[in-house]
Structure formats: C-alpha cells, structure tokens
Length: 279
Image 1 (cartoon, rainbow, N blue to C red):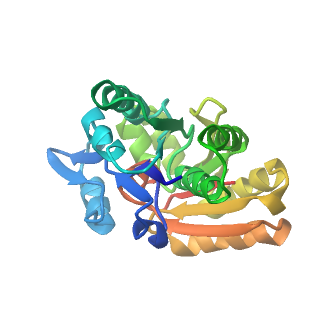
Image 2 (cartoon, helix red, strand yellow):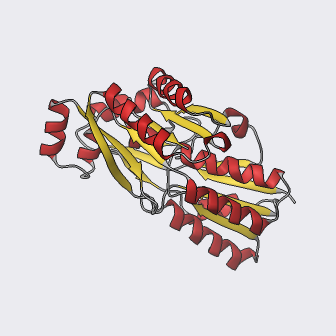
C-alpha cells in the first residue's frame, strides 16, 4: 500500500523528508504589519526575526485553507495522513478535517486521517516519522492510526523562551508581568498539557538555569527513554540546543536524536533564542 504524510509547516521536516515524495509540507502564512511571509522553503528566519524585533505588534498567522488540504489529499497514495498543530493553538486541524470532508464529498471515500498533534514544531515531526515507521513496517491503515494516536498520548513537549515579548504582544501575558520578568531576567519553563494547551512548569533567573530546569523535567518525566527519539528544535541558537542535548544524554540513553532549526511558525512561537524539546 502506498502512503503520503502531510505536515503543516509548523512541523520542521529533516532534509531527507523534504526530498521524499511520501512527505508534503503545507504552509501557513505569517503577517507582520501587513507584510506576508509564506512559511515554506523561501522562509528567511534572519529577516523574519529582524522584522519581529522592530515591530510593536505581534505577528499573526493564518492556517492552510481546507482547499489547500484537499489539494494535498488528491494524490495516488492509498493511505493519506495529515499531522497538524495542536487544535488548541491553531485552526490548522479543523481546516485539515474540513478539507477531508470536502474531498470525500467531491471525489468519494479515501483512507485519510488527520492527527491532532497536541503539540507543535518538532513534536509534529516525530509524529510524522512515527507514521512513516508504521507504514514501512507494513501495518494496515487502522493499525497505523491506533499506534500513532497512542504515541501522541505518550509524547511530551517542553520549551524555554529567551524573550517574553511574543507572549506579551499576543496578549497571553500582561505588560506588567512581562516587564517584571524581563527586568529580573526570569525565564519560564513551559510545557504542553494532555489536551495540547500550554502551561508553565517552572521558572528561573537566567536562560541557562531555566534550560537546566527544563532538562530536569524531561529526565524525570521520560518513560522507557531507550525506546524514544529525543527531538530538539531551536530558534537561531544551535549552541543552546547542543547544550540541552548533551545534558539530557548525560542522564538518559535514547534511541535516536534529531536537532533542527525552527521554520516560520515555530520561530514565531519560540522567538529568537527559544529551545523546544519533545520526547
């Protein structure tokens, strides 16, 4: 059975997947003060971060349309899977589901399933790779869905932000709280909830202390690490990502490690200097 894996552009794809016809990235669009940026291979992270720093406003994002997902579903593959940003953070999941329904109304039934990642960024990447692993193992369509949904259930996302400006600009944090945190150099340690929302786990003064606290949460929370892939994405800070990787591997052994730079939507969420870890 042939297959196709569609990932919205918040999920960073490794280079080998970008070249693999089994994978397709469906782009979201960023807007900074009326300037539109498509989150695809043309995305320029350096230019984006400069524009964000210069603007008093928070960049906005728009998810792919149902028609764009329909276009991705219209292929020769027998089994089609879509992996989207958490439904609690974006309309991408609902758009992908609507695209599936519209496709089936127009073209008939097909094996299409949309995974709500309940995560973002590198978390979507791991889910897409899990789908690939299951398909290569010869599992049937329903078996793949069952295995991958169980994988999502067990997945955990963590991140530390260098700056709280993005949270302040989009209204998730009060101006006063952001000012006090920035003035005292307080960095939050954040995580995902089982529903796919964001929660604050802890905080620390200084980025390095916050990263070390995040490592503690990861190490304490991971189950059967030898069966897991450790995935790290970073926004313009490869040295921090490497430090986090080394600190985790000092304390647990994992099956594999992936480190990627953030694409457009993830750069918006993480901000310059942010680190995201999923295991």
